[in-house]
Structures are given as structure tokens and as C-alpha cells.
Length: 331
Image (cartoon, rainbow, N blue to C red; front, side, top):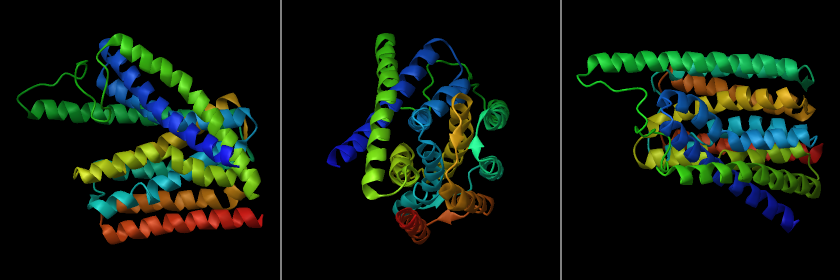
């Protein structure tokens, strides 16, 4: 039992560490090749920060643990709204009026609805993959269009021009990008090796804990694994709140939730079909949808989250975890 906990904890730490190194190394190489930061941000950084969830879901799917694959994504999306937004609000006011947040939140609610509809097919297979990856391509193209328009407006309104393809401009979301090409290559290699290793130990530990507790793999994925893979987003938003930059939190959460559903499930189901556990379909996907609608309301009405609201969100997440475990033990 102790070894299962150590395996899960060690696997999650390895995933976060390896994913971070992979992003830093990849960004460094891409910048040296002259790839625009816009493209880097929408591809390497976006997919790289979702690498822990991706390798967990893909690894679980290949090992026949569909509950872990789907529960990881659904639980992570719930944690992103209730915990990743709630905890920073306990530190500093977190405004939800970021430009474009409402528009992207509407798309997130739509994507959540499409995902739930696909889940009712019973098995997420290549059909689901085509639908989700097509929506992902649409999202990326639209994000690129909006970003280019915004930068063009900024360029026209300011006296100095900023080049979109400058390789030495630091990305706001990535710190510690190595300047040495050899070091960047080492980062990439360590990341590529560490991710599957971390996923293996996480899945082994999670299935062992589930058996010992008498609950399903899905319950562990919805709670422990989902929380673990959401730690990078949580750390980012907490640090943003400490630095009085809480306005970026809602954008990060919306983007992460969209990528979780479209990229992670889309890529995984393109490789291996996933059986949808009945327990997730009956309860958890609806909690996820409710959280998406809540996030849309916060963005639409530009609500500023304070300590009281943050406490309510965190308490709701605690109640959700309690409900999942109670239903898992009862089933």
C-alpha cells in the first residue's frame, strides 16, 4: 500500500518535472529556428503544459484503464474551475474580465456539451477523435487570428513596431528557457524519457490504491490524479495572485480546459478507444458542465473573485471530492 502511494506521488512529480523541461527545451530550439512566438505559444507551450494529462490518459488507455484516462481529464477540468480559481482568490482579488474570456468560455461550454454527447455513445473511438481534433484545429486557427489582429492593432497604435517572429523575445508563460542549444536538447531528451516513466508509475500507483480502497480506477483519476496533474496550473495562478496579476487566471483555466477535452481525449482516442465508465457519465461530466457554465457566468459578468467567493469555490471542490469517494465506496 505504501509503495502504491510512493509510486503515485513519484510519478506525478516526474510528470510535472519532465513536462516543464520538455516545454523549456522545445521553446528554446523553436526560437533558435526562428519560429514565431505566436506559433510556439499555440502549439509547443499549449501541448507541452498538457503533456502530463496526455501521457496519463494515453498510457491508461493502452493499459485498458479507460476510467483513469477519462476521469483524469474530467476531474482536472473540475479542479481547474473550483480550486485553481478559488485558491488564488484567497490570496488576492482575482478579476474575471479578461478580454476575450467570455467568447472563449462560450466555446468551452460548447465543447463540454459535445464531449458529453460523445460519451453517450458508450465508447470514445475514432469518430470522437475526428470531431474533437477538428474543433481543436478551429480553436487554434481562431486563436491565431485573434492574436494576430490584436498585435496588428498594437503595432499600429504604438510608435515602435514589434516583430512577431523575433526569436529572442521571451514568452510570458515560460521562464528559464535555456540559451545553450546542447542544454535545450538535454531538456527535451529528459522530458521525453521522464513523461512515459512518470505516467507508468502514476497509473500503477493509482490502480493499486483504488484496489486497496475498494473503489474504481475512475474515482482515483477524478480526485488524486486529476489534482496532481492540475498542480502546474494551480502553482501558476497562485504565483500570479501573489504578484498581483490575478487577471490572467481565468484565461489560463479556460484554455487548459479546452485543451484537456479536445487535444488529450482527441489524441488518445485516435490511438485507442476508451470505454466511458457509467459513474462518470451519471455524475462527473455534469459537474464539469456546471463548472463550465459557472466560469462563463463569471467571465460574462466580469465578476471579481474575493476571499469569500474563493472560499466557497474551494469548499465546493472539497464537497465534490467527498461525494465522489462516497459514491465510489457505495458502488
